[in-house]
Length: 135
Image 1 (cartoon, rainbow, N blue to C red):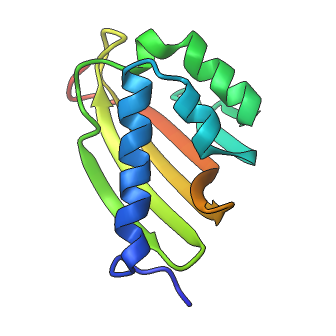
Image 2: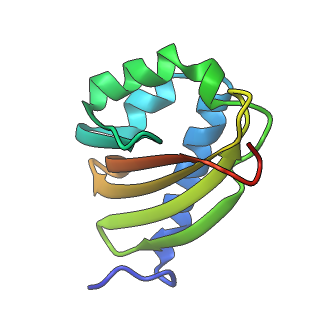
Image 3: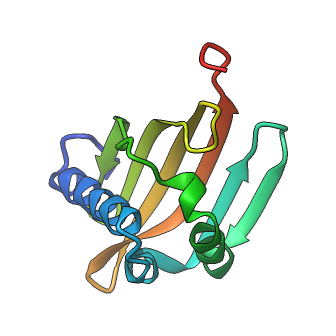
């Protein structure tokens, strides 16, 4: 079965990500360990074209060490795509971040897998770019 935006699990996958965002913005890092799959891979494409690859532990450490720069008062502003099937989900979401004093657009492409009765993030691709209109 192909993933669709109409599948009942699409709303559940979105709620899972909403819970992760809410937990991390409140500095509740336990939620990271619950939602990140043991084999999770994270790719971060930075403004200068550098690509960083982290596993679950490396990415959790990155989030914990850089929380002040990643979370501010802006909510995650736009879901571009939320789709799922019986065992997999995919979300594309973006936000504008001004915590560093320069505006950046942060886009995430997140893949979920249903395992052990819960949705877990298996792959995350994070892209950042400066917004020249707000520099």
